[in-house]
Amino acid sequence: MSQRLKVKEMVMQMYEKNLVLINILRDIAENETLGNFAPGATEAEIGRCLTDRATRRAEILGEIRQVLREENVVHRVQA
Image (cartoon, rainbow, N blue to C red):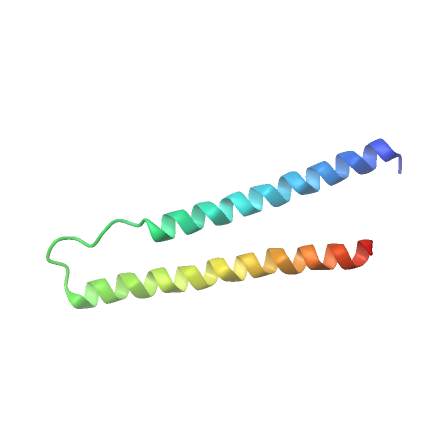
């Protein structure tokens, strides 16, 4: 493979990785800035909302771990 094609492939991989990271950051922002509780919300409603946020936060952390694992594999292969 020519050097130019290698560079182009690396740039595309970096671009794709950046898109994944941007989407993860967007998910974090949306999760943490979800609307405040409605006035008069019951403790049960607030509890469900907080549980949903915590669940989504755990999912987002899983996505981040996956990206880091993939990056670690790439570095091992290149080493």
